[in-house]
Image 1 (tube, rainbow, N blue to C red):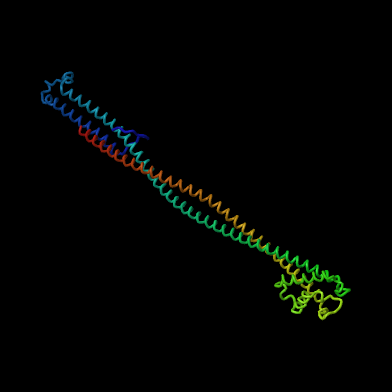
Image 2 (cartoon, rainbow, N blue to C red; image 1 turned 90 degrees about the horizontal axis):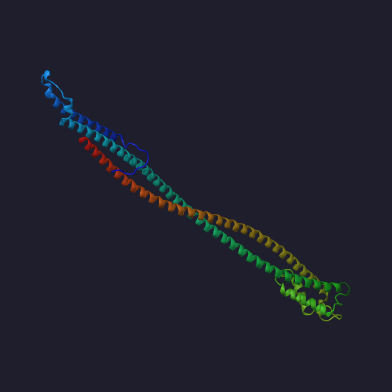
Length: 367
């Protein structure tokens, strides 16, 4: 019945210890009562004998069978008391082992249950945080994609606007240059000779320029030239030489309008210059608006990317902690199960030990 134990030796409980000492005292009293009875049985015959004839042989008494029985009983009593003390000492140690392990395992089970509850709550919290971070990351990725799409669209529009402006600017510059050359040609001969000294090739070049610009920029000149100016320009384009012949012809009626051609060319040039200036200003405004939009979108994209990186790192850390918590809760459950099984076995063993101790106590009391 001896078991391995650890920890300080402690008494299991007052009832068991008291019972052990009471058993020892009762056994000793019973043995003493038997001895006294035997002694009285031996001495009583002598007490009823006359005093004169009373004698006691001490040496002989020691060798009598009854004396040997008394001595044997005393030895048995001492042996019983010694065995009771040894048994009680072993039982006390066993009781101490039971008490210590019961207390430790009970505490260990309570700690494990509390830890499992804490870990379960932690897992729920980490799972919720993980879900929130996943949603936020997806939202940030969507925002970044939308901002990038807006920037790409704005960039494509800006490139288209720039290409259109460059083409328009080039066209207007060419038109302005051509009109400027035509005005210069006419202005050199306007003052003295009334256009009569202009070479035929120059006149035809001016007419070609006028016809080309009227055709190419018809929409731009809409509302700029009056109806009479358009008729004069059309007549000049059809017969430019009639405006500058030395000998009047039936078409000479247009000659007084020669100065009007000069004015039309200047008006067209000024219109193109004004339109070019407006286009250049519009281009500058479009470029600035694009640069502002680009800077804002790039800032938003950079901020979104920073949020994605930060929350992705936080998500990885959260998922790692969650995984570790799940491992911890499984390990703790395994420890809890082992402790519960051990405690159940301990209680059964200790209850059996208590029962056996009580039975031995009763047996000794009978002895």
